[in-house]
Length: 327
Image (tube, rainbow, N blue to C red; front, side, top):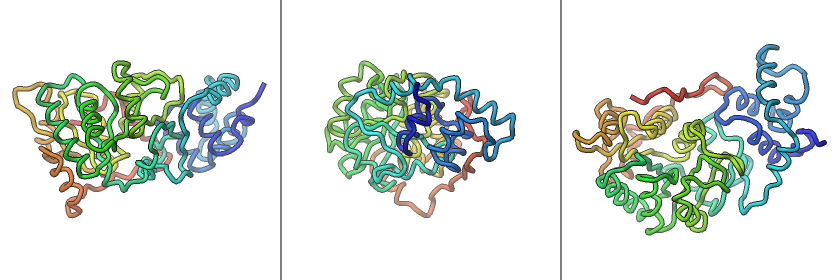
């Protein structure tokens, strides 16, 4: 039976192994990855030697967590699963270097389908547009108009492929230039939501679909939360079009703030529960008012008021709590 080390022959295959057995957004694993590299990290999982930066108890706990899912046969099957995709790692020229701002929370690898050259655009060229799945007619209209404006100004629209605001943003981008990226919370072979399978397939053919989840990975609540950091880090600005008071999309705004990215929000009717979250972001000064695409372009060009980045120390125990609210 092969061992994990036999499967992890180089940095790419080792990162694929790590993605198959490890949880994303894990600062302990991510910190070690930054210090020793993926090949040596896989070796540390199998050996009982000391681990840099961890005491004996911490090392034992970390190894135990990863060994629970470290079945070499299952990993080999996952690595060998066929598919029309390409795996990117930080050493690749198309790797979006903006993700490295996440430090120890940087994805181990990215599974991609489509135009990976969209990842090499300057950070200010990529805009994340997100918001409520149960969007109102107002929210859908604004998302379409805003995304059209941005697409016509050659910006790359980044979203999560979900119903509501994100689907509207993707469709507008496809109608006006094809420059859109869908960041999934599932494997590429399990596109979610199922009702957007055709849309996601269109994005893969005309734009780009990517995920840090290996093939066969099902979408889970935790994966959606973890994806927020990728959506925020990918772009120079995040725009929340519509969000309720406790909407999960507000997590993306919080992640963007952590990274020092611009955050914009579309104001909505004070009587609309669907805009309670975005209105509160604006009220508390956590976001700038966005009503159209040119507002976003102006925001990105306003270097005099660029937000400060909150440094995330590599290896520090920084994990965003699923229950932490933006407001």
